[in-house]
Amino acid sequence: MTAALPSLAARLDSLTGVVSLASPDAAGHRNMVQLVQLRWLAVGGQLATILIVHYGMGVRLPLGAMLALVMTLVILNLVSMAALRRRRGIANAELFAALLLDVAALTAQLYMSGGATNPFVSLFLLQVVLGSVLLDRWSSWAVVAVTCLCFAFLVIAYRPLALPASMDQSLFRLHVQGMWACFALMAVLLVLFVTRISGNLRARDAYLADMRQQAAEQDHIVRIGLLATGAAHELGTPLASLSVALNDWQRMPQIAQTPDMAQEVAEMQAEVQRCKAIVTGILLSAGAERSDGSKPTTVYGFFEALVAQWRITRPYADLHYDNRFGADMAIVADATLRQVIDNLLDNAFEASTGIVSLLVMREVDQIGADQLAIVVRDTGPGFPPDILANIGKPYYSTKSRPGAGLGLFLVVNVMRKLGGAVVARNRAGGGAEVIVTLPLAALALPQERAAPDGR
Image 1 (tube, rainbow, N blue to C red):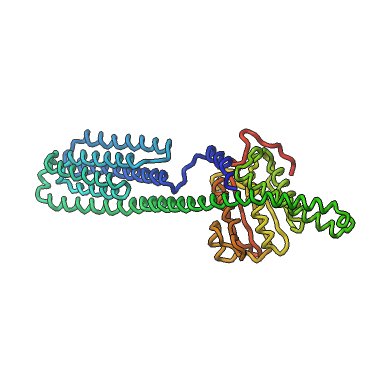
Image 2 (cartoon, helix red, strand yellow):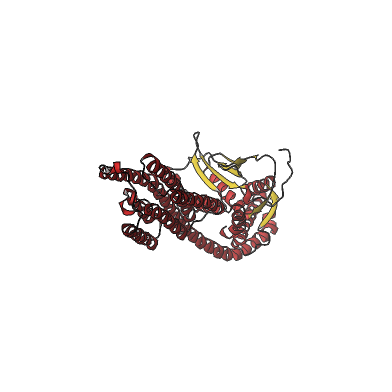
């Protein structure tokens, strides 16, 4: 089953090209968005402070140079927003450069407004905190070194403020008020942005942990595939011998003249042929023979052929098939998808006490893309709570035989590779239900659609 994945998975990747929202690249993207938003607040805060101090308090500032620096930050933000729309991944070096630009802008503004005597000089700590959260270790320490150097520079080199004579008596009080405003601003910004950034980093860590788990599961699947392929090769010879022996028995007069024995031999021959077909399917999925692994067909044609074949090999099953897909469309049917559905039907048949149902529908996902929905229901006892909690993990099963529980494990992993999803739940009226959804983009023929057949 696993070897049939690349054809559909590669086709889906070429159509989507979307980075997971929790991936490291996406986390860097969202962190850069946070920095851009923080810079917008800095622009607004600097502009308001400059105008209030210059016009409201009568402190003469180099208004032209300071406003030009604010406009530079605005241009930098517009360029950053355009870059964020064009690309998804943001590297550590880009975040580091953005923080250095913010430090440089803050240093220039402080240089023109009193240097280290300006109570807002403590805003350097905000850059240090952001660097420690966002950046790799070396770049975090680099931000610390740069901010320390900038602070030291502002101690010895700055443009003194030209304060009005009326402020001489209240200078210390104004400085304390400025320190309070700086503290309040830093506290609000830290809570607002650091919590968001920490959430992005937690999502990234969870994504990486999930990727490690998937890698371990894929390794497990590969081992299963190797064992299955070896067993299939070894079973080929005894199955061929049994088929020859049963053919000889069918021609023996003693058996041919006894209808009951002839019927039993015919049934045995059918079961041997079914076993040979299963072995052939394993070898095909493993890549031993791939000339006809993927075939163009339609949604209705694919499911009708699948249901007909399944009913032949399981004549005692009561399968209710309902296709509500709507207008038919051309698809590329891979053996992997057939095996996934066969696996679900087999599990439902083994668990069911009556009817097994297969429902096929077309749905629209949250982003408006069409997807194929496959619903398999049974009338059995349903999933125990511990099985539902571990859907997709190997060897969790209600069956007591060794090796049981691999069916849903393989289904979940195959659908994950194809960009789909699997949901298992118990029905209110009894029995279990497994819903498989798969983007139609992963199956559709390029620039082709089958004509509606009126169903």
